[in-house]
Image (cartoon, rainbow, N blue to C red; front, top):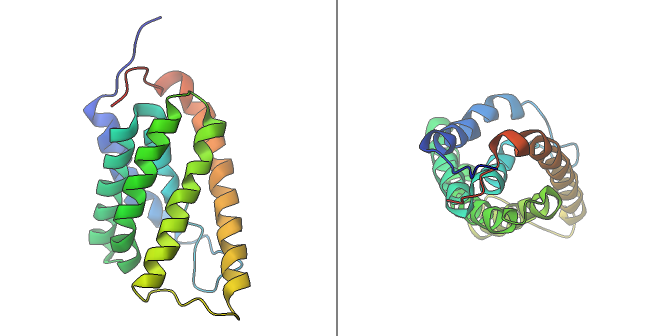
Amino acid sequence: MTQRSPKWYHILVACLLYPLLFLVVRHIPNPMVPDAIIALNMIIPVLAGFLFGPISGAISGGAGTALSALVYASQFDSLAIFSHTIMGFIAGVVGKSRSEFKTAPTILIGHVLNIVLYTLFGLLTITGENLEPILLGLASEATVDVVAILFVAALLKKPLYCDQRL
């Protein structure tokens, strides 16, 4: 069995996929949170980390989200750069186990850090009235993300998983 290592273009594609997928996911509303979407593009750093390694996940999370923040002038993406960098890195560390089932829940790290940062910087206000819808929205989005990661990781694992991690 040959050892596969990540190539620069793997990371480049992952960085570009994040903002490109936003063109599609912006039309998928989160049914529990008004004016929110199911941000499926967040799965890209997790998949990059799983397939290529922690540095690849961190680069795709940070650079992909930064590119999206610039292209779409998004305050949310600007604040999410840190969260998605950490999430991609941790997905890469966990992904060394070759288990998409262990790696998929790392998406929760990004979601929780995003909620904390959005709250700290005033983009999200959590009150007693909106706590339940926010938690339900977060749970529904995370569930969709985990299922998507499991599905896509299973499809890409054989052709793209790299034993030599970057």
